[in-house]
Image (cartoon, rainbow, N blue to C red; front, side):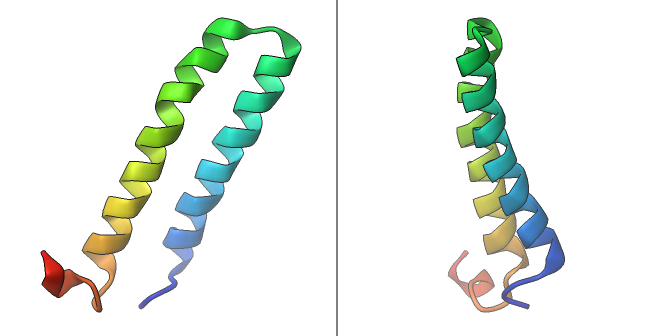
Length: 62
């Protein structure tokens, strides 16, 4: 299916990481903020790969 529950969970995790990054940065924890700045793009990449691999409409591209 195009929009499965796990796809929305992955998107929610990406948004949650972004909110957590801004909150931690505003509280003054710079090291944790820098680690999250690396993890946020990796989580987005993983969500994109998961979407392409599980979507039957886009699976034929790869």
